[in-house]
Image 1 (cartoon, rainbow over the protein chains, first blue to last red):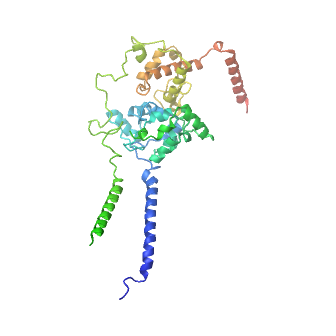
Image 2 (cartoon, helix red, strand yellow):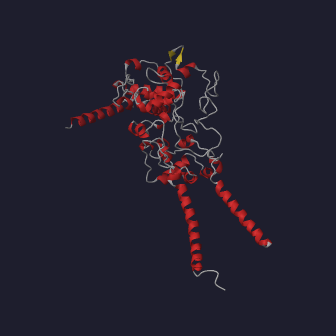
Image 3 (cartoon, helix red, strand yellow):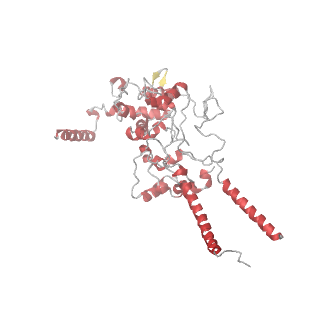
Length: 218
Length: 211
């Protein structure tokens, strides 16, 4: 009776075990890395807008405070995309003929909102409140990155749960004095952890609660 | 086929199906984008397309009753009031300074001379931002500044939606500080302030005299 399997079957069998294991490991590795990559998180990808608004021009070059436009950020969950009225409080006087600003003028004339595209879009099952972060010394840049250098606004952080938890577990790594929250040029001091721990205590931040599920999922 | 091998195969099929279902379930996003509307989102339900609804006519939201004319309009019988409605404290002035630097400084400048960044951009403004250091504005009662912040003036838009009443008063008080800072009589200064003034003038002269 001839042999059922050819001699090469031994090699093939061994090879398939190794290949199978490698395939499994690489699938997991590729999957986990891909889900963190900018390709999926969109970090650093400028978002098209109806008007090419430049934070660099308004914040860095003109020195306008964040709150001039995002006026509810200290008291409300949302920082607020400014209403057209805010744009027009300057642009009824400056750049009045610019074609780039035509959608703003039309919006003001017709009372229809400008449909800005969301850059920081949290999942709907996440509760986020700007005011508490501002009041407890989390600077705008900590989440919004070098916003004063952005010609077209892009997402600077992945907004993944691990990213949120990084700060909620150790707020002393990122916290700054309240009066520096809106300072886009703020540089953390060399003794950040030491100062941070002091501020966490001073601002009465209950670190134990910050990782409760219901802090963000409510 | 034996009974045990059949049940084994059934188990394998079930396990695979459950695993596949679990993996596929991770891909759905209906919890990411729930059928609910958040602040400032678009909304096809209303004709204006906005989720944020305007106030119903003839209603007053809780906390928005404006029953004190002097406090909420800065005027009594259409005349600007001359008295601040609250005690002027250091905290109030510091609050006013902070708010002034957020909302007013871009046009009126750090010291209120109308030389803010917008004025400096070299654009031909039909009406340049006002300086506070004129006899007319020094003579205006403090309620006047409150009224201008509330209702705008000339080409200046209303800031009522961005600055709540208590902050408008704080800013009005700070405008007074700025006016005094540019128009103080030397006779009103303390000896210490006079000395500092003299020192800074000397410093300016010496830097200017350098080649």
